[in-house]
Amino acid sequence: GESVGLHLPTLSVQEGDNSIINCAYSNSASDYFIWYKQESGKGPQFIIDIRSNMDKRQGQRVTVLLNKTVKHLSLQIAATQPGDSAVYFCAEMGGGGSQGNLIFGKGTKLSVKP
Amino acid sequence: ETGVTQTPRHLVMGMTNKKSLKCEQHLGHNAMYWYKQSAKKPLELMFVYSLEERVENNSVPSRFSPECPNSSHLFLHLHTLQPEDSALYLCASSQAPGSNYGYTFGSGTRLTVV
Image (cartoon, rainbow over all chains, first blue to last red; front, side, top):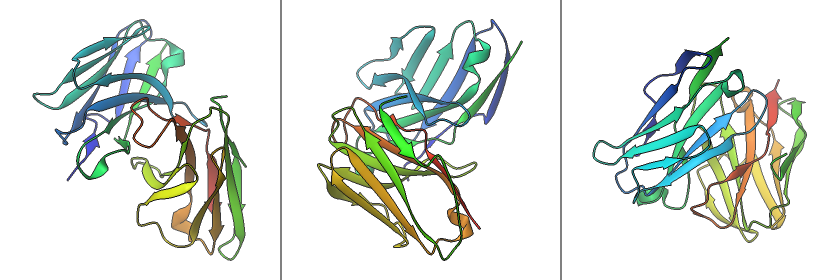
């Protein structure tokens, strides 16, 4: 069935280092992907998105990479800061029975050590 | 604030109570959603509304009853809930169902059923 999951439930990095959060998806028909950040006590906040006709997209300190061949999505955060500590979710949309709805993975908790 | 406001932020209710969650969006979006977020589980889509009409109900128990009186407001009426219904309930909106511009989430209502 369709699923969006993450390789690691937790990730701990040193402040200033780069972080890489990974996500695997199973629906090859998905054509739109989003990364969300959820801080404690808040709802998910949009970080960056990418469409299936692209393999890389950059934002401010963040980069999303999409590898459609292996159905893999990653979020790279440069110079990680304490304020980046949160749970990060990938989500996919498009195709199949989930068309029109976002399907979320379980999330990776990022902890930044000072 | 993201433009999607949820009230109350916290709610404790007994299994025989009736309560309602409220969501309001000020973004001019035409689609609104209810999601349930339980510990260690992906976000689960509960209901989708487009232009005040319910377009999807993901097999949610009848003790959850949504209402969308207009495109800016969404309610979730709760009655005779079970302890396993304790979770964070998130409201989201988007320009349209399946809108490939992501969803904007509120901060959620933390519900505890005792």
